[in-house]
Amino acid sequence: MTRRSVLKFGALTTAAALFGKRLGIAAPELPTAPVLPAKAKAVIQIWLSGGPPHLDTFDPKPDAGYDYCGPLNHPIPTNVNGIVISELLPELARQADKYSLIRSMTHGNNGHETAAYLVQAGHDPSDRLVYPTCGAVVSLFTGYDAGYRGLVPPYVMLTNPLAHISEDGFLGPQYKAFATGGDPARTPFAVQGIVAEGISSHHQEERRDFLHTLDTLGNTLKDDAQIQQIRKCEGGAYDMILGDGAKVFDLVQEGNGMREWYGMNSFGQSCLVARRLIEHGVRFVTINSAGWDTHKQNFQTMRQKLPQLDTGLAALLQDLATRGLLDSTIVWCTGEFGRAPKIDWGEPWNGGRGHCGKVFSALVAGGGFRGGQIVGASDAKGEEVKDRPVYPWDLTGTIYGLMGINPEGTFPRFGDGNVRITQAATGDIKSGGFLKEIV
Image (cartoon, rainbow, N blue to C red):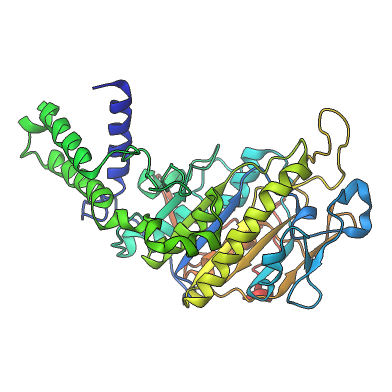
């Protein structure tokens, strides 16, 4: 076996561990938080990693001047009177009645790692605990522990894991996202780490059988309870990649017209995969879209990234609505922070934007969120919150509530009892409250 084969098999066993719950393998008993009546069944999180510029996307400031707007100073009206967004988002402008914009997100943190943790986990990073991300929390309360028996794990990441964040936190790896790897824009979409691209199902089965012949310990102790559990987990993973689970990721079944509607690029095809996953009962899907850290040449990057975001996200919203899935599916689009409104035109930045944790934007839709609304406002140049600050725990708490998870309840903490699901507003920790305006 080559080193690469060993690494591939190691990745397979990691994926197999995700199926322990599905196959009835015992896990530590976890107390269940009180739940509220659920309006949503699933979440699609579109994570714009690096921090999207709020002035160039959902909070344009055409009157701020060229040093703030740059060449993107002609925002366009949407199909909701009074709401304007970037000129590079025309498809989303036609769908504004389906989503609401939060223009007063804030946490004041300008570090990628800590800001991402704040938004994803909804907790202050100064706490001594490492809290799970929103996806892991949803997986805990609506996944295997709640009776989920889907073809694929309840929490899926398209395609690479989040950078610098332990998604499962103190909950443990069984609540970590299943990251597919690969590129859904390629045909076929090979879920990397489990099956190598270009390897047939028959060849994959032969590899598995050969690995079993080398497993002398497992063959010797085949009647051992722990060995049998490991084999069950492995069997579950192979069932996904060689059985019906593999079909969930097969975009060929969608046809060229559907694929082209979403955009024949990695982001657009990830949106299409996310819709398919939700149709098959997956509880939380994160589309991890990289490349939004635009310290240099921000506007060149926006002219490439924003049309892809526009096409893919608009198609996702319309497709979910047409299929009757938007009412039960939350769509949440944001990054760890915004980007500095004042443009740096000097060398080597050439029109770049720095970090801005004081104020940024988020888009939310479906699953109980009303469309066509604006929450909060930034100041005239987009540098500070002007009205109705919304903190990360305000948004994650609202999402939990819509998912039927009591945001003021508790969840397990290994060691000495329970802790709150959402950040409590105490001392220096502020809260704008749950987003009652749009639910």
